[in-house]
Image (tube, rainbow, N blue to C red):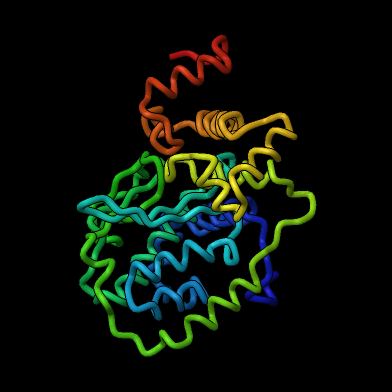
Length: 293
């Protein structure tokens, strides 16, 4: 693995190694220190190049969303907008991979470095959110990011000013973007023959919880199928989108509750429940004898 910069490492082993290295080096801020000491190209490879080469930050962040699976599987990133703010979110999909604090702090630190590369050295995010509990070294972490930090949040994310996303930024490299994207598409891992339609739908649902309102039409478009064809496949497998969504949510909720340290309101938001009460009703319907309020 050490001999090649492009060799693959299982995600669970990578996050565990990161946590172990922080403990062995007695550096609780190891992830953030590494993130702030690298360039976007060093840390993100071709994804970093796309972020730096796109005419706008919005296009760069969306390119990372498209190609994240080539660089790191089992991970979801998204760019969301509200009328006033923008949110860039990062999450390891498997809730059972925990703890993963060093990876989260490293990733958000390197993204801040990359964004400063486009917006100037004085740029800072409005806020930085982390899914893990507040560490004792939080004051030092705040100084590294130069921004307010919030912990025990539904996801890891950077809060950005909306106006920064679509400002056209000078770059001499945009001419290379189509070639790099073609290359990343060719490198993208392909689904093996064992990945059936139900498995693909389950993966889409798991990646999109909390980000996207689930509908048969939307999932069908994502799979590049017609809604009727998708429904026919699900029916033949004796399931449907609602049932799959409930199954995925249950798996994610149970994993998040086991890791501890998170409020149920945050879990509800991360998994697309309307509120804490809706999550609580769902949990009680699954295992009412095992859960205490």
